Length: 90
Image (cartoon, rainbow, N blue to C red; front, side):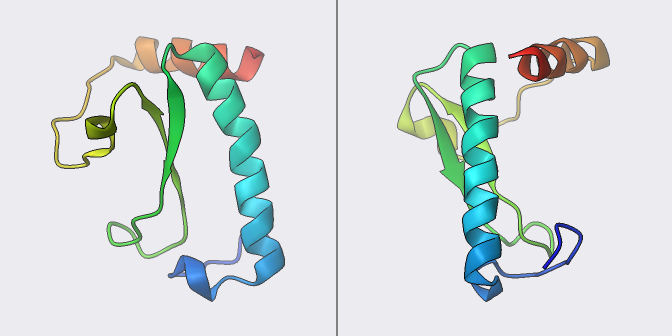
């Protein structure tokens, strides 16, 4: 299974692909945590908002930070790029 294989439901993934997804997320989470001030990086698998497997890595300071119904933070394109650059360079 390649990263381009589209699967709708995470528990339909082959074990090896699911493990690889989480190992990859672990590396990204470390970079995000180094770039963004937070206590932890949370992981959420919701699976209802788009019809393909993906996980959310969420900078957390408190449990309520996982509430997807809360108003989203807004960033300018320049702010997004600065965050992305910081993550890439970590």
